[in-house]
Length: 195
Image (tube, rainbow, N blue to C red):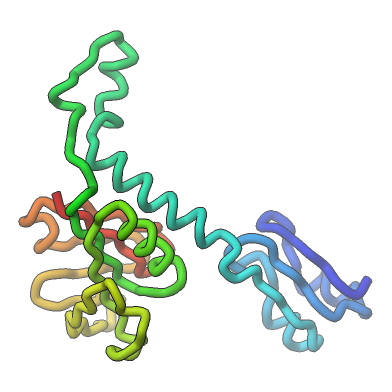
C-alpha cells in the first residue's frame, strides 16, 4: 500500500505506519489532523495531505444560518411551539440586514462568510494580526486593530474584550452593546452580530 486516505475516525497510528513500509502518503478527508501521528509520518518520510478548504463553504453557511436563527429568536420558543402555542411577538426577532458581523481571525472561512454576509446586506469587520493591513482581503471589510496581548494563561485581551482558550469567550463590549457571539470552539474565529 502506497497511499492511505482516511476520514476522522480512522486512526493513523505509529503502529499502523510502521506496518506499512511502502506507504508514501496519507490523505485526510475532512478537517483536522488529530487522528494522524504526524511525527511518525515525518520520521518515515510520509507526506500528509489535508483537504484544506474542503468544508469552507459549509462552515460559512453554518455561520450565516446560525446568526439568522439567533437573531430571529424563534428557536428559543421551540418548546412553546411544540406545545401548540405561537408566541409571535417573542419569536419575531430582527433581521440580519444592516447588522455587523465581526471576525477574529480572517482566513479562508471567515472571508467566505464575509462574502455571504455582504450578499445579505450585513456589514463586516475583522481582526487578524497576521494579515497585512494593505492586503486586498480587507476590501468590503473594516480592519479592526485591537492591539490584543496574549498573556501566560492563554488569554488574549485588550481593554474591552477577553478571549480565553479554548472555548470561553467573554466580550464586555459585545454584551453591553447587545451583540451575539458565536464561536466554533476550536479556534479564534468569533462571529459577532449586533442587533
